[in-house]
Image (cartoon, rainbow, N blue to C red; front, side):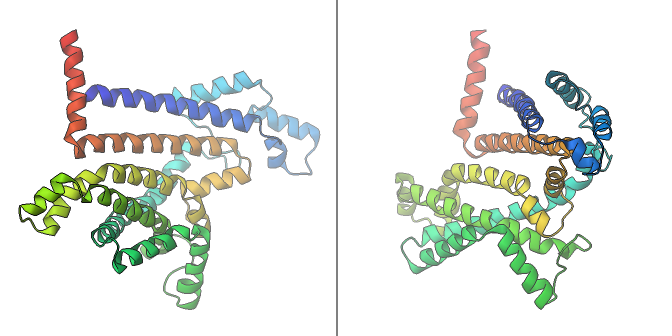
Amino acid sequence: MGRYVLRRILMVIVIMIAAAFVIFTILYFTPGDPAKNLLGASATAEEVENMRHVLGLDQPYLVQLGNFMYNTFLRFDLGNSWTYSVPVMQELGNRLPYTVTIGGISMILNVIIGLLLGIFAATHEGKWQDSVAMIIAMVFISVPDFWLGLMMIVLFAQKLKWLPPYGVQYWYSFIMPIIVSSIAGIAVNARQTRSSMLEVFRSDYITTARAKGQKEKVVVRKHMLPNALMPIITSLGTAFTSIVAGGAVVESVYSIPGVGLYMLTGITNRDYPVVRGCVIFFALFTSIAMLLVDLAYAFVDPRIKAQYSASAAGKRKGA
């Protein structure tokens, strides 16, 4: 198992290097001049050229790429924001708690509500309860995040005045962003749970458990759900990365100073260090999330863990 984890960690490093190379190359060949954008339309050609020199944009592509890779992976320095002159690493550290808080709580809601809704639908297959649950899931997955966010501001902030429309001044400022972030994930998780549960619903071991006189709740909890968890875990891992990496829309609607809004601001200002730093962060976060998903496979299914152990034992024996 240890060798598998080590191999996946090495794969994460490769993914990080590839992501850094791709985002640097895309931004390098993107039309436009960041120096002119920073100085404004009234800047002279000489001022623009001096700014390009200060930013290092007058150097060849390979030189810029080499400096970027060296600073990022050997010095762990993502550079300073061209717009605010603040280290990108420092700003990411300041904004990360907001993004992770919204993503983490939204994920908890996804797991609890999505699993319960999917199990409820699967155990009432073909009945009106199943139809209602799937209609709810279909509505949740069809509503655009930005539209739902704006409608909640109109209702709960302007009309009812229960919640603040934006910002993070109070703990309840996170209620609307969390709800908006979790709606689509709940729907996806519910549909995936229902599908996975129905796949094992008529399996032989389920029939045997029922024939032994076990209660339906015990059959669902001890036999059906553990064997249906594999695709559900994959769905949860993907949903978590989507919530965090795709939170730019929610953070923009509610003016949450998170990583997503930071990246949007960097794109608008053509602040390349900010964009590159955010992309690398999201690549790292996604890679770690997928690693945890793979480890969860081994925890849930003993056969996978035994496979890794047998593979490692075989290599030691062969040696």
